Image 1: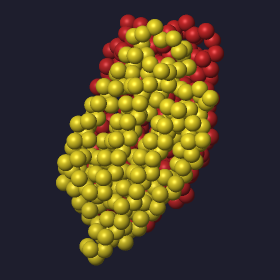
Image 2 (image 1 turned 90 degrees about the vertical axis):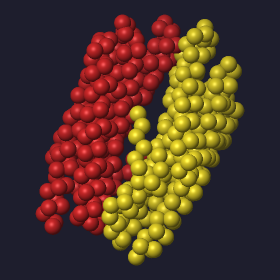
Image 3 (image 1 turned 180 degrees about the vertical axis):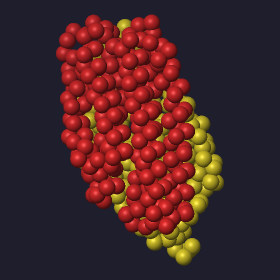
Image 4 (image 1 turned 180 degrees about the horizontal axis):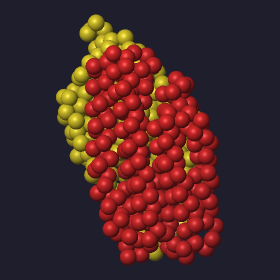
Length: 216
Length: 216
């Protein structure tokens, strides 16, 4: 009984890591589409989101089957519920990548990010992608050390977002309101991807140690 | 046993409705602070968010106790997990109200919303507050009809957001990049509050009927 429970739980965590891999691709491709104005790549990110949604449903079904059949209590119960929360957050990170891809698509044949914002925005995209990649192995290896480290690095994204705002606001911005709005929303989307990455990593800490990591 | 389960579940739903009441106040006060530049009211929204977070923890503890002690299966299990998801979304709606309040506070002694955007932004705030108010009674009364209706009205918020963008982009916007960025982010925050409201209402439909309401 206990062994069956842990085997099934391992299966769920493998699925979560696989979904995180899909999200990593989504963040990467959406960012490429954004920086190059590649409409086909943007479309691909948008249509690939169904696979993430379907994978999320599979994890939910398995988690409910596990709860129903194995009737876990206390710690085990919280682990399964954590897995349900993690999959919701991973799906949301996929949705946010779709939002990035949609801004890219909207501005084709132009590129949404003006030249002087490129460095900051590329850096945000890299940091987001890197965080998602790390979350994937944090889930796969239940790596508490790496999860704690990820939480610390979240500050980098906040600094980038502030830098982006300063660039938007301090110069005599020549690109008009449309580009400014795009940049503000893109910054928000990358920041949210990073927030969710940290939150998923914190849930791994909880799953392994039983300790809640509080944030605000 | 079954009776104890349903009594405790009723208690959880009462707590969810009460949290939704706190969120309603947060949305209302944040919007007032935004439209008037009232820094004290903005601060109040920001500090009142702790009460929502604490109430969320209480609901989570009760839901886990219910799962552990009563070991519900199948339908009942999904209802308790739905309650856990609802409380996460309600807390998030509180966070989004804090984001609105922080933009209000940042612009004091000025008002973040320029005169010609006022009508649209006030309407967004009203629609968001109205949706939260309705979700509160949808939770309290397990009102499936009202929940279905709420899902239909979500389109109003989407239209308002598009109208806001058109106002930002079509005119010769005289208020500079900072105000444009504020408006873009405020529009996003209100839209997300509305999205979560619809999602919570859909979970009530699921709790009562067992039918999943899919969106997208």
